[in-house]
Amino acid sequence: MEELLKTPLHAKQQELKTKNVSFCGWDMPIQFDGIIAEHGYCRNDVALFDTSHMGEFFFKGDIKNSGINEATSVNIDALDIGKCKYGFLLNEQGGVMDDLIIYRLSEDELMIVVNAATRENDFTTINSRINHAILEDRSMEYAKLDVQGPNSKKILEKYFGTTLDELAFFSFAQTKVFDSDCLLSRTGYTGELGYELYVDNTTSVKLWDALIADGVKPAGLGARDILRLEMGYSLYGNDLSEDITPLEANLGKFVNLKRDYVGKAALEKQKEDGLQRILLPFKTTTRRSARKDFEVYQNDKKVGFVTSGAFSPILNVGVGLAMIDIDGFDKEQSIELRDKRSSIEANIASLPFIQNK
Amino acid sequence: MKKYNEEHEWVEMDGDIATVGISAYAVEQLGDITFIELPEVESEVSMGDSTAFVESVKAASDIYTPISGEVCEVNESLLDEPEVLNEDAQGTFIFKLKISNADELNSLMSEDEYKNFVDSL
Image 1 (tube, rainbow over the protein chains, first blue to last red):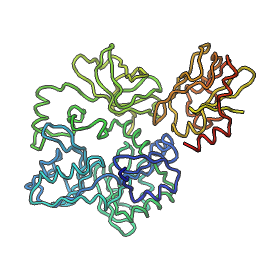
Image 2 (image 1 turned 180 degrees about the vertical axis):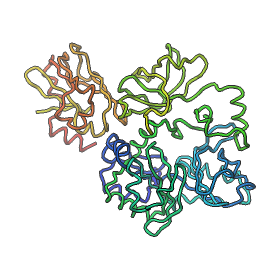
Image 3 (image 1 turned 90 degrees about the horizontal axis):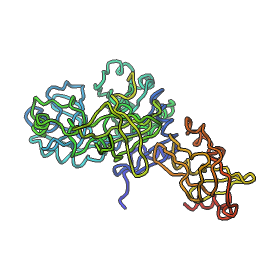
Image 4 (image 1 turned 90 degrees about the vertical axis):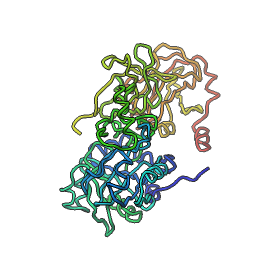
């Protein structure tokens, strides 16, 4: 059996009460104190996530002429230095190979952050779409810590001071912590005020120790999944895949169809032809939750399948996303989420599931 | 004195009334419990039947009755607060049965036998 990769924080995490799981080839904590407790720390206070398994590529070259501006849906030329943007790496059919965030470090330098599961394929693909430029996969040199929650800014002030005051959402600062470089961005996957910190492996251990000593609670992948789903954020591999386009994923607002990039032609055609199916949010009517691959029925007719589902400790019902066939579907009518054993009543909802975020 | 089955359910007898719950090991494996479905009072169940059902943050799981009988009481407070099972599994009952066959108890594990069983997993 292939050995699992470990982040630089693995040993530190093992010193705490933790339950680990194999995730995309990495040995990651699914929980520390408990999934619902950790969800609460993030929503009410501040929580610390180790997301070092994600990938970081560094690009250097001419933004306008190297092909990088057409390699993904992100218009880097229009992105200011110090800003980052969410977008997609698409195949020629408009299917999502990965969702990613591109950071404009300087006139000709970028950091591209990708998912662990697709990192190698992403690198090969982006590299094949550029010329006269340098692309390096430096994922193994970087650790990433997410500090998320209403008290996240207060906690980080000790280390970053007034730098935090100037940081707007989807902006970042290239700064220092413990005398080492730190890219600090105001981004996150939870819907709370929060920051993502990119540091080298050695510094990540110092930072983890310091934040834990400050009283920040560690949180794992289990809580992370509930937090993102309460916001309706997609997860690659569940709600996004090579068979799903951003339009079908109801993420059309993140793709500009007026400029050219790989996959755009297919999206344009899909828009013209009209979508056959679309990702919709749902809420169950009880404490029951549906999971990925539950089938969706309306009036005893199969209309789709669940891509993500979880129990929301705030709403006390199940929330999730489902890919629904549009033809004949009535958004106002209730649906049933079925697996071999159960049939769960639900209704189409609107995002975000939770308010004031 | 609790007796256990291999599905991590426990039973405690008082006359011919069996009180049934799930073990601390079971809730540890399940993680935070978010939903429970309880049996109907007066329903008849046989040893090994799926009698209740739980959903946790990680998985969905049937709860099998360790003993046959007629359901005479269910713990309705769990419907709104299933997480109580995570806080105190050994001290929280799920349902009670009026048992039909006391011999079935002989096939269950004692506290020590169950502890050894869990250690072997």
